[in-house]
Amino acid sequence: MKRILFLFIVLTLISVGSAGATVYKFQPDPVDLYDLDHHKYYSWGEVWSIPTSEKITGASLFLDDIRNWDNNPNDLWVHLLDSPREGVLVRYDGQVGGNNLAGFGILLNHWEDLSTTAQDLTYDFNASQIATFNLYAADGVWGTGWDPDCHYWNNGVTLSIETAPVPEPATMILFGTGLIGLAGFGRKKFKSNKR
Image (tube, rainbow, N blue to C red):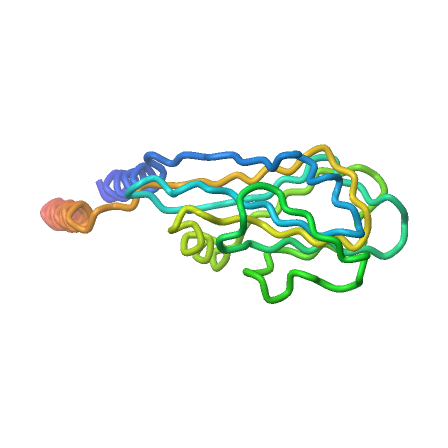
């Protein structure tokens, strides 16, 4: 009986946690961010609001077939930005070394010495970055910043965002009360079987 009760609680928690999860996918225009030229840095802004009563629970960046143009040391910095201009904006930096986006938004990732061989890269946001993403996306305007200190050919960038419903406090209280009741019932049943 105890195993059945435990299994029921675990399955209920899993179904409550995953119910209603939705994945949204975004791509810049152009999808390859102009092949991330080393003489420039970029911002890609989106206007999209989190659906009502939902929050961002996960996010990842996917870079399709990215490859460096030569074998020299190289860097690619990617930032999460709050309220950039919509679309892709390109600025000239003359391939000045270092991160031109330092101080703007938060750093998502810094890749170093990417290969000349095409590879797919996926970067999953950590919990702190997801919390910041929820703050940035609250007004419906957010984006990413890219500073390549080398030239990176690629076949496209995709940002995937997973959202899930935010449980209402009353629902959580009711759910918690039900779990306590089930646990009490199971304990009573267990004690009566022990005699």
